[in-house]
Length: 418
Image (cartoon, rainbow, N blue to C red; front, side, top):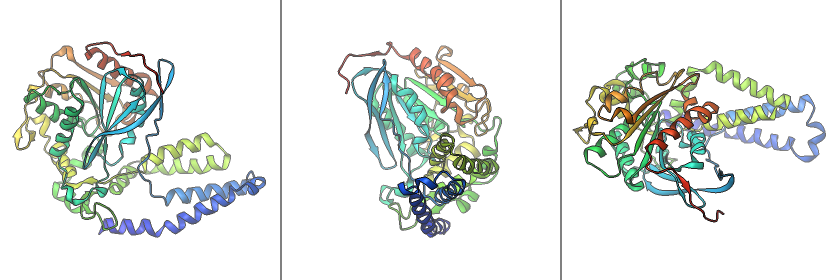
């Protein structure tokens, strides 16, 4: 009922959206140029754009990474799905030419936003790594004939992707997937798989949420599982390919995140309105880029969401040594060959300090020489995988760790690059 109401509301404001869009186009026609620079016209245009954006439905953004720089040359990059499963595609950013660079599997969070949230992370690694990413599907677009998707399914997907990529793959899990990444690594180690990850990099992951709990942790742990089932799980209505799927809707998660910092979001929109009137194009464009990504949300499969709430936030199964996979207790001590790097942000208000570092106690049989922890000063949650400090400090730290675990120094093989 809630999902249908939200969908109906979105449809009802579309005439207003199209009206604002049409008038904005009219005022930007060439013959309106003489009037465009007076304050009245700029104020009208700013108002129309604000209406247009506030009534828009934000679809999945594009990565838009078409080129990179390697050894001073501009190299063409194209996206290629190399392995496809119902709820996720394994996406490869294939570069023209052949390179002996480390393979990196970026595990994007399945937590409401699309994998394009890691655009800056991907862009940073492309020049000197063979980059793959988990491109999770919006659950509302997955037909019910494909079945459901649970926490165990998430782990199976990661293992299948690692098997597809083969040995010597470095797995980087950002935030939420840190727990299933540890489970997948442990199960593959127990099975003595030749494709268990060469290294495991965990960034801002809720591995032990009993440590320095944040407001997000308190929200998840302050209610029982029945409350979540009754209050946040909805059924996808008939207008979508996944009609009938039980999901945790993205719009509910987005409203929760925005309510935590509502004053900040309101102030940013007032600033955006002022920037449009002043003609500050750079600031306005930065606002558009951020909110085009932030407001584009996806639905999560209900079973996976409830599994995660129960196992990670309510029962703390992994740090307690009680995590099951396919009804069998996993043995985290089986992991001995995979190097471990944990990364935290000093000011992280989503995953508290120490929650990710807890992985070192859980994966206790990894030799000390293959383990490292890094805390980035003066950054919050998003700053550990995006932005200037990531590019200048966190990213190089991860690259150096991967390089130290690689058998050979990456080199570029000569070839014509188109």
